[in-house]
Image (cartoon, rainbow, N blue to C red; front, side, top):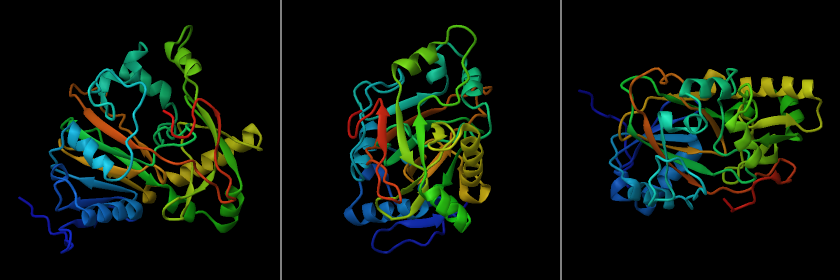
Length: 321
């Protein structure tokens, strides 16, 4: 038996223990289901901004408590379409349940879906809904049922990744913009592909700054990911591909990441503006369910170093989901 020895703030009762050098912190001494007072809310908000993702264990949140927690930090997003596992009477919550994810809805086994969506090592890294003109500000994800092993999630700190670039490269990327598009990199099935038809019917694309200025911290954030970024505008295809690969490798260097092992009752709360994350790909062959519930908080339109905001191409408008 181990005892948590994390020092706790006397005013809030909260303990914050960094989980890695650049990103991630474990928070103890708080019962999320009991509700948070103003001081606790402020302490957790500050921890999220500082550490980009924070973790709580042993929580007893139900759907209503999950939504109430999210409202302490922003306005929950209500998605127009959710998977069948999501609770019909709680529109703010989206539930994923392994083989009920997108692949199954489009006629693919889970392992084939992952192979087509993540056919390179960097493709799976993403922020939530990054092709929108106003990606969510944050995500709160809780675990209901998890495998006894496997199923970890990894996050990367995009502010630290930007700061770790050389000064000449920072100056170069500060003025660039990139097109983010739903379904980038997906490898279609031979012949008719139901997911390709879905992408064409529900296409979302936006030109975002390659470096965004965080609206709360003022940090410069390397706004790249492997799942949505199509091309850096103004560069040729070969130039764009080379620069993006360099920047993605920078963003996902091990020293800028943290990996979290889920347990039932675990909650992760991350800043979607300053991180990308990698969902697990090691559970498709396991005969164990993995049921997760998430609430996303509405975000703003990213702004670049030059003060220019993102521009929608198709499929989204600020505040309209």
